[in-house]
Length: 477
Image 1 (cartoon, one colour):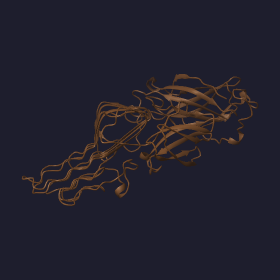
Image 2 (cartoon, helix red, strand yellow):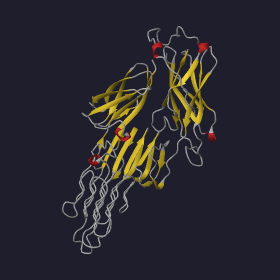
Image 3 (tube, one colour):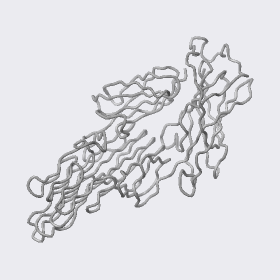
Image 4 (cartoon, helix red, strand yellow):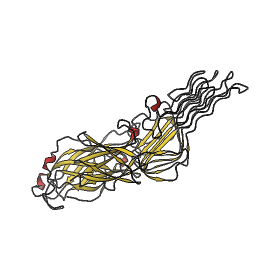
C-alpha cells in the first residue's frame, strides 16, 4: 500500500528501539494495491522498532540523499500519516521534512524519506554542543489513537576556515561552506560532509620544508632517506609517488608507489598511496611529501583550488643538495554533482642546491596522484589526468516496492567492479559487474528494510573507506 505526502515541521532527535520483525507474515498477493488490509485492525496499530540509523543533520540538503526511516510494527493501514516532532528544539533550528511515505501491503512496516535542515549555532562539539536530540516519530491513521516511537537525531559540526590541524579520523560535518582552509599535522585531511562541500578559494595540505603536508611523509634528515616507500635515497634523491623522483646523485631517486585508483592510503610497501619524502643532503633535510586531501560529500562538491604540493629545502652545506618531496594524494567523492577544481597542484618539490657552487643539486620529487568519484560532473578535470572510481547514482525514490531494484552506476567504461549489498541483519552478498556506458545499470536484490549497496574501486577492499562508495535503499513490499 502506498501513500505519498509531505509533512514539514520543526523537530529534534531520536534513538531506536529493538524488536524482531517476522518476514514470513508477508503475503504480497493477499490483496490488490491500495486496498484495505484484510486482517488489519486499525485500532490495534503498534510501532515496534525503528530500523534506521540515527538521523544526521544535513540529510537531504545540498544535493544529498534524504535519510530513510523504516519502522516495523503491526496493523499499519493505507491511511497512515507520518510526522516527526522534536522533544527539544535548540534555538528553534530543528527542521524536519517527511515525504514519500510507503506502507507495506501486510501492514507490518512503513518507510519514509526524511530531510534535516542545516542548523546554525547547534553543533556536535564545542560551546554550542547540544548532544543527541530525541525525535518522536508519530503515526496516525483512521480509527486509531496516534502511535509514537523514538528516533535519534545527531547535530554535526561545521568546518571552520583558516589554518588548522586536519580533522580527527571519523569526523563528519553537516556541510562545508568556507573560502580558504589550510590543513597541517599528521592526520590526513579527510573532510566528509552529509550535505554539500563548497570551498570558494583553496584547500591545501602542502609540505613546508622538511615537514610533510597533512598525513604525508616527512623528508629525510641530513644525509638520510626520505620517509615512506617512495622516499628518496641518500643523498639528495627526490621522493617518488605517481612518478619516480629525480636522482640527486646516482641511484638515489625515490620509487613509484601506490596505484592510479588510490584504493588504499596506507597500504604496505609499494601499495602505499602517499608521496615520499625527499632525501637529506649535506647538512640539510629533504623536502616533505605533499599531504592527503579527501573531500567526500553526500551532495555536491564545488572547490576552486586544491594543493598538496611536495616541499623543498635550502642549499647544502657542502656539495650534495637535498631532494624534494613528492606531490600528495587527492580524492574527491560526490554523491551529487562534482564541479572540478579550476586548479589542482600535486607537483613535487624542487631539489635543493648543492652548496655554494651547486655542484650536486638534489633531485625533484615526483608528481602525486588523484581520483574522483561522482554521480555527475561539471567542468573539465585539470591536469594531471585523474582516474575515476565508481559511484551509485541516487535513485529519485530510494524506497522500492519490488525486491529487484535497478540502480545506475557511473565510472570508467569497461571496468569490472565489485558490488556488496549489506542487509539489516549484518549479512551481505557480493557480486561483480562490468560498467557499460555512463551510467551503467545494475539490478540489486534487496531484503525488507534498509539495504546498503556499495561499489568498490577495482582491487579495493570493503574494509577501506577510501575504496568504496555506498547508498542506502529500502525495500517496503
